[in-house]
Image (tube, rainbow, N blue to C red; front, side):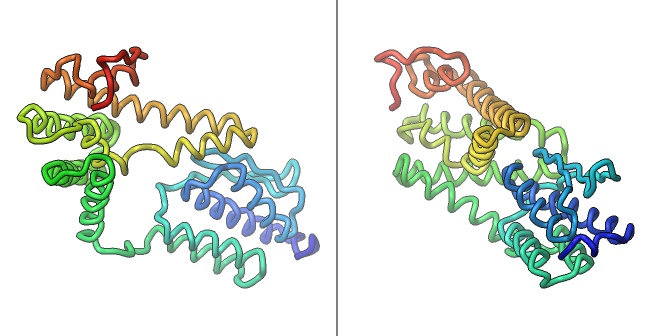
Length: 282
């Protein structure tokens, strides 16, 4: 597409709205901001605006198709699922290769958020439990450990669904989930039902851990995007601290002795306590 197709003001408005909508969807997929910016510049150049400028962040973007021209801000929606992420990439590809028009691309992007989940809710809940059991089979296999991890996964899933309806619980979800799982697992450990309490605590919480967030932040820092990378790393570190606070509260409530490996490891996470010979992973 050449620049003569970018002469119409209406065409510029439509293209700017589409690119902002596309960029916000790409951010919602968890794609690093440097990749989002590069992909959007390819789209704008194809649409006839090679001098477009975009400021992309982890939660939104600002786009201007011409230097000194009008700019539009777009706020990224909540995280998209994998099948929705595939559709976002497909739409971008079709726009670049003139397989769909701007209007069709905008309609398809708008329909993503209204599309029903690919799998029924009961299957999603079951997958949460299966995932916790599978990780437990790797970290701490044992019949009772698997049963405790499954029950803990049910508790975490219930709290996740409640957090989607209550904003206060959503903020405290990492701490509340870690505390509930910790109390359940440490109670079973105090009665001698399971071994390796810490390795049984982790599987039900694995889905909530910000692993992908930290990896994306590191990639953005490596690419020179300091604001987005540092923001993601800080957010991920705060999430890990909230998990640690919940587990420490559980150990305090259950009166876990200092010699217990779980307490030692958690204290080393939060306060930098050196792990001596008597403070080793069980």
